[in-house]
Image (cartoon, rainbow, N blue to C red; front, side, top):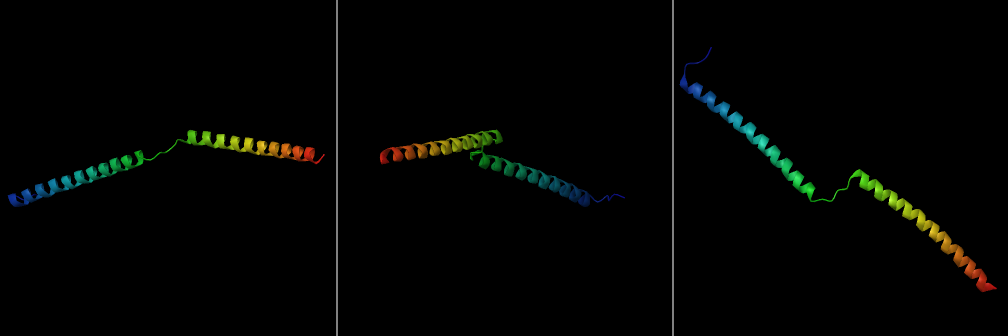
Amino acid sequence: MQSQNPLFADLAKLLNSAAGTVAGAGREARENARERFREAMGGLDFVSREEFDAVKDMAAKAREENEALAERVAALEAALAAKAKK
């Protein structure tokens, strides 16, 4: 049963309008927060997984080459030391 009182009808319209405004403000605040997060993250230098894996593989290869060169230098130094003793 609906009330015929215009005061209650106006009050219901006002509350309905306020609820819509609050919901809209909530959506707008959520979108603003997302945009600020995107801006903050955009300034950081992130790399893709593929780039990370490529650099990781390059570092492993460089480490292996470094170890091989260290062994080679040690062998050359030992040979030079043995030659100097003669």
